[in-house]
Image (cartoon, rainbow, N blue to C red; front, side, top):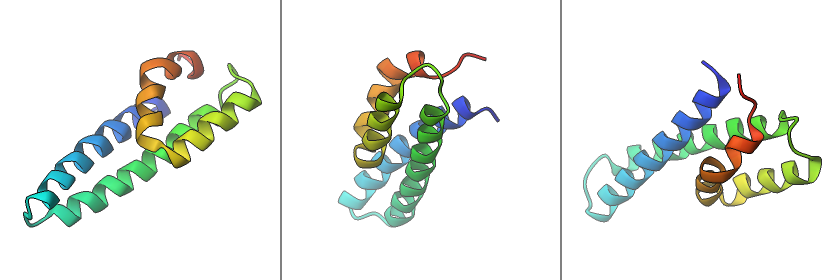
Length: 95
């Protein structure tokens, strides 16, 4: 599986699973904890794969790589949305 596919799927999966898990937790349904743990794991997969994609890019300079790395670590949800809407087209290599 290509790195770009892993980044996209892990971001979408983490977003959906975390939102559903949070809703189930608010409404006190069983199984919410399992969904939240799954959401955290998929978020970690997204963060690691996105940082790797940014760090291996040759299209941006070191300063911007550092900015994206810090953003993914501390603001993973917001940084993910910005990365997919604006930044990824410019950063990721086209195969």
